[in-house]
Amino acid sequence: MAESFNYISFGNWENVEGNVDVVAMGRGRMFEYTPSDTEKRLESLDSTAIAFLEKLPTFLCSEIKSSGDTVSMLIKYGRVSNIDSGRKEVSAAFETVIDFGEVDFEDINAARAMFGTDKFQLYRTHWAVRQGDVRDILDRLAEAKPGLGQGIAAKAAPAVGDGEVQPPPRDKKIIGDADSVERFLELLYSSPAKAGTDPFFRGHSDARYELTPSLLRKWENGDWQFMPNEDRLCKELLIAHHDEFQGDDYCFDRLVRMQHYGLPTRLLDISGNPLVALFFACSCRPDQLGIDGEVIVFRIASNVIKYYDSDTVSCLSNLSNLTYVQKNDIDLSLDQDAFNATDVAGKLLHHIKSEKGFFEGRIIPDDLRSIICVKAKRTNTRIKSQSGAFLLFGHEAALPDAGEEGIEISRVTIKNKAHILNQLDRININATTVYPSIDQTAVHLRDQHQSPNPVRTEPRTAPNNLPAV
Image (cartoon, rainbow, N blue to C red; front, top):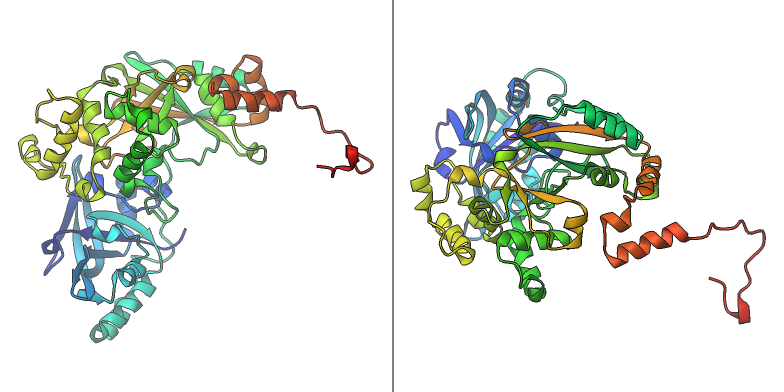
């Protein structure tokens, strides 16, 4: 693993100016812009995760601001300790080793290059664990602040102790390996059902895939792929194909349709049929058949499952209509009255009332951070055939490897994919039944009925002197 460091950023410059003894921020801002694998190892913030964070060198920065032709930010270098993790907030003691003060950059790109950030990260209050060469960053800061040069060289040891610091292991509950349909079902039956829960399943053709909606996927360095452009993605598709969405009553209905057509959304498909999930765990290109797949098993508390017309579903779905800047203004640490008095709550309420005119202006902040299971209208054949439902991710929501309250997660590792696909086909679980559209049916029939390629000992001759193909 490459060298890691804490990157802690605040929009309020007062949080970085002068003597800083303690830093604190909302739990939902933890590990944004952190590589996905590292985030999953740390998200529980248990004792091993905290020990890892406290060993890392730390940059405490302000968000960037423009002044004339230059941009600047406050930067301190030091270490964190005594991390205290609550349900809503994380706090830590901060020891300043080097105070760089206000650092000027010729433009935003120069500032981004310093820490390897994308165009959004420098405008975001958050705590990231980034990968990079800490000494190189310190050297470049020394060039920007030549008066601190010798002091920086003397204090540049980036970590406590020697050797590379590693994050804790993943916390996945794997109930076994399956190399056949029989073995897969045996593992499911051996895992006792829990009263008051409903089972759902999801298949990944590569066990290394993260359990996250397409909208919330990250690049390898931790930068978002799509999330900052969520509102634009949705609006552009609605503009281009408005007629397709005329029958959708709610924003959630539109998100389901967008998901169906491949747009990145905050929905994660799950299925009530374990064999459909097994099919997805085995479906891949021929050269990927040797890669282990995975079926994720969810046990979701029956009393928290929502339907498409739920008020909570409307609140979470309409987050998609807010711009990234507006989402940054959401403060879920506020109580209900204070939150509903904010401008951003008013904007969200406007979108909710556009589909539910009777909705009271009483958004519950805790609801916005949740992940909920939603049963959708079966408006297309794919949802019907896959016994489909969805996990809807709220603001700054992430699903831990081990699940969370109301959502228990376990996994089955899938091997011998080709054999399992043959078995599933014999009981009519194949591309035709799982993807019941004419194009997928045609592809499945083509592959099923193609004659074997004969071994040729001489070049093929085309009739009528036409070139061979």
